[in-house]
Length: 148
Ligand code: DQA
Image (cartoon, rainbow, N blue to C red; front, side):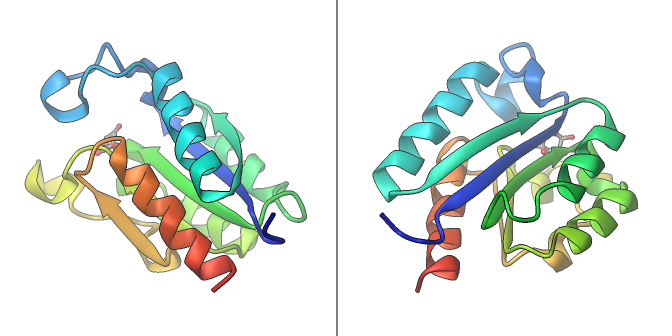
């Protein structure tokens, strides 16, 4: 087992509603199934994942405050917060762990306001528009980052 292998997978606002959201952008996978799929990718890659989801911005921020010593890296999909929640940017900076940003949909090809990410500058990579497979890409990238 790798020594730096604990990944926190953090989902933000409205991601728990997958399965009820626009199928064209997000597909039909429910949130539970998405987490199971991510768990499968992690097992294949020899990584240990823990999941967190909230619709409350302060809980997302506080989770990042508490993460020190509990995780070696972060995969985050903050949902719409990605585009404007500077408090999440600052909390991610405080967490000071390698992070990869993931979006199921291709945010560059949608509305103009989705093109900006307030967390991208703190992330080692951004994966967008690859659906659930994007999480495999993100975990693979983090794995390289943590234990090259
Ligand atoms: C999303 C893209 C965001 O723009 C949107 O607000 C979401 C989901 C994605 O995974 O594609 O809630 O982060």
